[in-house]
Image (cartoon, rainbow, N blue to C red; front, top):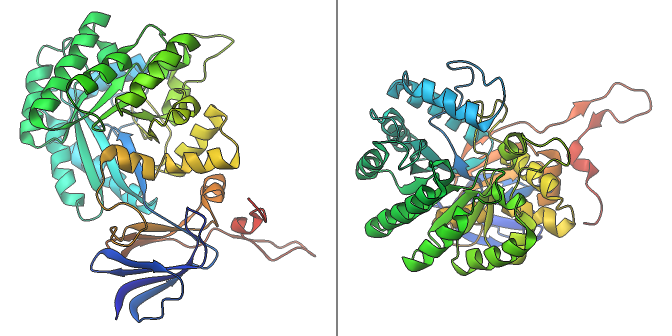
Length: 430
């Protein structure tokens, strides 16, 4: 039998080493040692990690790469970012959205990021962002799985046309129902918005992904309502609560009640470490809150936790590179999850966990899965995060769609090695 692609001697995220991966017709057809059949292309992965592709389950592609338009966020706060986006929406064009989004997708592919869930603002009566990202989804469908969330940025009830526009966006082909209950005028309106949005999703058979409690206010408890509505409407496994940063301000007794409710409702939790560590705690002097939800505690309850990039060079966040390993690194540092097992868990938070939250079909490195994966200049997932490892090859449907050279440095120092490869510094046992 002849294969389209054969990867030899790979290390896998689960700890297996020296594994061959055979691909045919866009699928993985064998994962085992010692495959000797012919292949149109063979990749030697000796001492290198082969991973499923990176997955970003929370992003804003309609705003990406718009940094400085119409001006810079001088305070660096969430509210100034929202105000800036409100100014930009008035001059936003479909062509501009498409151009920036496609440019970002190029960057994503170079980073081995092949699945993205992006929120798209529907509080623009022209729906320029929706039109643009529907076009982008079609253009990139052969190399990026792009999910779109109808996101009423200005509040379902706070914005007069938000619900009408949201329903229109869903009719146009947007995949998922979004919301932002903590941005409504009152807590009561926030709870009502959660209820209404979940009912819309239930009626249409859609998933829900809600910006939920992205605040330092411990009394912002819309995640409790979201978990309740998920169970009431039978949406278990189809709902995600994103950000959830108010939880870092809540008292432990209430959280001990809340986390079992989230777990029981099978609500996914999506933390966004890079941006929330910068946006939250802005009113604090010291002690200063960390800006991330309770990842470690959620893990102990079996809640599926994913990490998102959220923003790259836009009104809210002037940094970012599309590198989900940077996201994982920040997540483990902020959560102080530094045991070997916990670091591996944080790698899962940018691969298998967001894939589960997004319901991606055929994701993984088992026989029958899609032949989508990344070859990394690292020996295991811990080293991949530590090094922000180079993506030596990105494979989609069994075809190499991006490559880069190994990251190494030549030294000209007498008595020292001529070449330094950061991947050679991995500890002997871990």
